[in-house]
Amino acid sequence: MSDRATVMPLPSLGGNVGAAVGTQALTLVRRSWRLSLRRVDALTTSLALPVILMVMLVYIFGGAIRTGGNYVDYVMPGVLAVCVGFGAGNTAVSVAQDLTTGIIERFRAMDVPGEALINSHVVASVARNLVSCALVLGVAVAIGFRSPAGPLAWLAAAAILALFLLALSWLSAAIGVAARSAEAASGIAFFIAFLAYPSSALVPVQTMPSWLRGVAEAQPITPLVDTIRALLGGMPVGASAWHAVLWSLGISAGSILLAGFLFRRRME
Image (cartoon, rainbow, N blue to C red; front, side, top):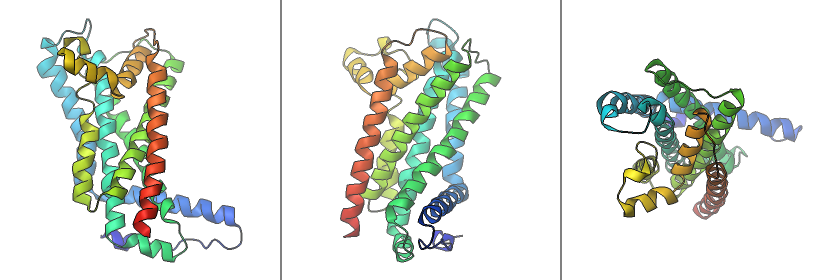
């Protein structure tokens, strides 16, 4: 079924405006969720690729990588970062498709703000990719991941991961608004998924060349992974948690402003 066929009756903003806006938002989120389920190739990639990567790293390369402990315990937070990057990148494609197929004009004709449609893609992205992260965690436990962390540490790790996922989803949405086609959005969004590789996600940064070590330490994935790894490993977190939160808030704020600016320019 095409994207055009997913236009559904939305409640008018007359009468109880607050209730109508809430119902519109929920309807748009459900639409975005259904669209992501229909794109089987993208959904399969975002779900299967991180799991395949983790199994491959643990069973093929894990014996050669020295981390001072069980490699699956080390790499699981890093694979979550890879999962977040791949999953959030699909948001760029979804937004670009809505903006290039003409469906955005049809929603605006029904008194639905275009910004609300972008918001719905971000919310659906966060929900979809939290499910993907849960799948990765389940497979990690099945192949040997163990954590001494208590419930509060797990909750903190989940909150930091969700905050970063929200930030990357907004960044991808901004890319989708800027791109002139879904293919271009997909190509640009690839670099979001690539961010996890030159970081502490898969190997210790101390093993990298000095020039690459500086890049790894300065980018946002490293403090995110280091924080989750410390929380789930029962180790002191240090300043990495604040760095991860600040990166997430900064990316979110900048991406929301950029997406709004680009959308207004595009709709002029």
